[in-house]
Image 1 (cartoon, rainbow, N blue to C red):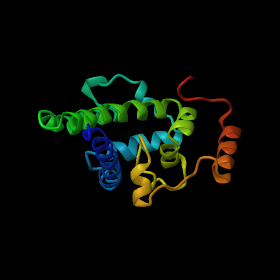
Image 2 (cartoon, helix red, strand yellow; image 1 turned 180 degrees about the horizontal axis):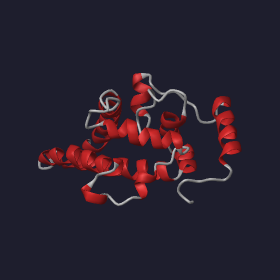
Image 3 (tube, rainbow, N blue to C red; image 1 turned 135 degrees about the vertical axis):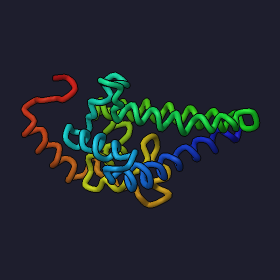
Length: 180
């Protein structure tokens, strides 16, 4: 049973490392296979007040094209499959890592389709996308490793965030990219 808390800690550490060093450090280069994260997902999130409408699209588009959501799923499956070799000797650890990959996708998708839910339940992830520093708040499911690594920078509820929300509200004219 020790595998469950160890798996949760390992999954959170993997989230932090992968987000910071793969999705951002490598993903900023347009030629990188990881560029979808910065150039599609972050761009859509900033442009649409945290919403990434790719989560509403089919996984495979015209002519077999993959969108950012599909690439995210492939990466999570790619991370999860090798973990299964540990299942016979550390079933709780392996199971927790696979669960964590599924949970990551579930809450990440919900956060980018329901920004108000994200502000309340995943403020650290909302801070990552909507805050002034997109090079902080690397964790998605829990902010544990952001606290450990000193990269947790609160934004939700600050004067700066409230001012930015009022500005966006005043200029949006009621437009909501998902419901329109």
